[in-house]
Image 1 (cartoon, rainbow, N blue to C red):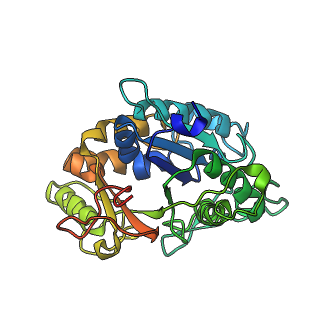
Image 2: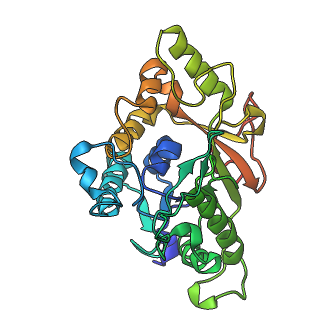
Length: 316
């Protein structure tokens, strides 16, 4: 039996910047596809070493102290992947871009207008030599291209050109994923890294503006204080996507509890009293059970009554 014949017939590759990004964005879809027997490979570009730590007893792991947060978040993502696995043992094929520790979280800060920008450097210091934001694009893309040629996914999911909200590592993950997808398909390029493979469909992750408005409106009507996603259900909602720009919306409501379990696996980054769980508690499965995508490459498959695909593999 050949290696390719042992692979699931349909294969999805996701490229994310830090541990927890995958569960926030596509945790329910990942759990659904694994349960359905589809291949799911996740590539994480950094270990999130610069993340804020929400657990007081673990604050010593911070970058400006013991600088061991990345090692801890490695255990968190392992627990999250276990939460998203199917009951019969099928799981997610998780990889670190270039191997664990090859690229480091670059850090970020908030712009006054509400989006992320690269972090200020210390007055007497410089960013780490392996900060992902400063990675050589071709080198990083080659690491990912080798995985693409091995896994041979029909579908790739990553961020948009702005990294969805400006984080430099999200923007770099977008650049690396899009470039690697191009390089992987070139027959004459780096033959030593595997046979060429062209990805049929590429999607950028999204959050439905209308669904988020509905969720925030429900919370407001219930008397909840809203301090995330802009706060006002009738105002600007940064980080959301107009529904007219959404190409695919996966109904993974049946897998919401697995998604929430995966989020609980990240206590250093996500509080159970925070916005993700607050929205879920008020709106239920609708809040996080539908996951949205913009199409960046490929042909749309059949559409539902809302003009959306319901499956990332539609038409393949």
